[in-house]
Length: 275
Image 1 (tube, rainbow, N blue to C red):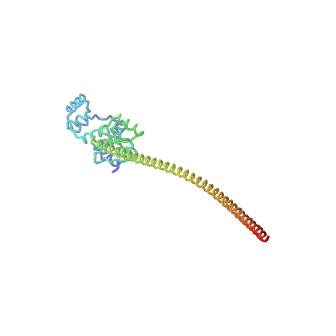
Image 2: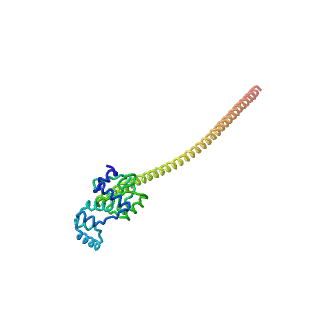
Image 3: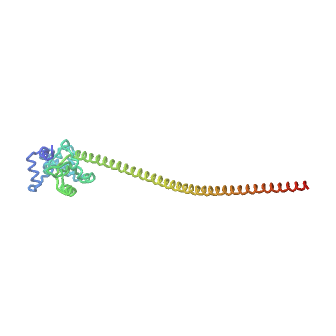
């Protein structure tokens, strides 16, 4: 059932109370006192209620709190009387269904401070559940919302249950935010560590490249020195071959010279013998 359908059903007076509510909102009639409504409902006698008012003045309690504490009425009964006093609808606990979009209109801290809970929408206006209707509360809620709204009366237990759900949802949301933040932090740390590893790997690659270039230069220098040594060795071999050829020629010439000398001596000896 929607709020628009449920306002009349939730009110105790039906169409008569709807007319009374409209009259109170329009300011055409004065709002009845709570004591008069309690007496009319048979909650207590006028004398008992006068005593309760005096007791409340001494203890700092409201009249509703006194009659509730004395057990003259239960929470639902008191909420119904308050709703009638202010011309508002009353919703019992079973009739309260919370719309998430509406609940998000008033954060938990402000809901607790205001004693109000946004439960849904009616004719495009937010529906606000309250326990104790006051002009100051109406004004504060409208100021918080930044616009008009509709009020319904619920029991204190119902409002506490709604606030408890909001606290639970808020705690779950906080845990989820913290979890997301922790995951994001861990991801950022992991990313930073990965970047650091990449930086170290890059530095290692740069050092390796420098070492390779150094070894390449050393290899090239060695190859040049080896080539020069090879050239020198070839030149030395050629020089040695030339020297060996020259020596062999000299030996040949020496042998030829010795042979010539021997032949000459032989001729001389032969001449001497012939003489």
